[in-house]
Image (cartoon, rainbow, N blue to C red; front, top):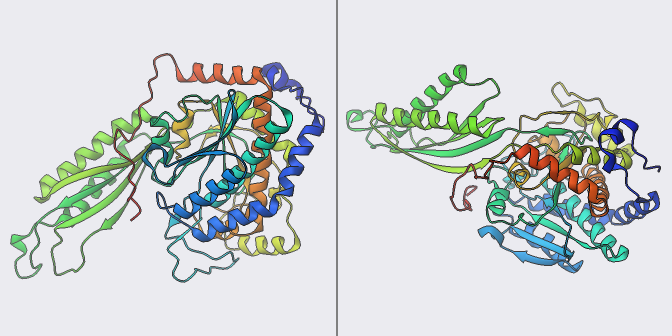
Length: 476
């Protein structure tokens, strides 16, 4: 394939034109194709483990062992997290990091079936495709490791095993521990219903568990002697719901009552509610959070209870790096989309019938979506990585087009060949992007310049979750 840049891109981003010949890319892509069965096996094994945040013991050990067998040096249990690790191969710079996730979501259980089929006795599932994230990133890192050895190029490829992305902010603790301080560029990807390398920012967020304490008594026999902790939670929720009219429109507030009592005839002396607050700007999240805390205190005062809260996680928004994003888009287009077999097409058609208002048609998995820059209303701890090192990512069609994340349909596709093929597309794209970055010093310089400009001279990284230790039991 001719790797000459499009004229418009070359005018703005001259550094995207690389001297690497297409034959090199073909060898890399072929090496990843040769590992398809390994990628599928890893993805399926992680899918079956379905371990939630900070409890991904078997998942982490599996990935570490595979990388160790490939000659990577492993540093396990980093940043005070038993399931976090860093795997490195090579010497000196440049240092290119690749992120890998592997935590599942609680409560979303589904077999790899096109009809709703929960697996008996299973309490979690890979509804966000992090089993694919882990497997695809491993495939890319291994391909780059062999390229470094065979080409003789200097540099280090580093695979970051990052636990608890789903509400646990594992990467934030790794950033806070300085594990990215010597990295030149970080690459990541995510499971999705489409192939895209958009330069999208995300929402900053913060979460906390608010715990109200009251006084128990018989709800009918002596209610005057009781102070209901659940009343405190409900008053708190009422006030925060009133806030929704008086916050910036991009704000998102959501909660679940995680403990509200055990029996109606016992006034509960303990109740807990778990809150998320999001906004595109971290500064606004901080400002709105003071109002959330004030509402909790007011609710406790008004109900005669007390309240304490524990910050669980907090993420900065993704910092867009346009030079890197455009390079990633170029590599994704070189790799291309995903083709279904007859069996996969049948599976996809059945899944598609279960979706509510799908945004994309069947067949779009073959395509790469147009490059855009915008806002994604999700949140990710990759945002904190992007605040300390230039970062770029992509999405691949691991799920049937139109499938939302955190659904039984995404869980199903993440456990079968449609998901595995999407992980292969990600592995190929990440490998090509990493090799481009090893060879193209102009691109690395441009990415750093863009990063420095975006971050500003006065920026000082501060984790939105404060100085708390990793909440290793937050899913227990």
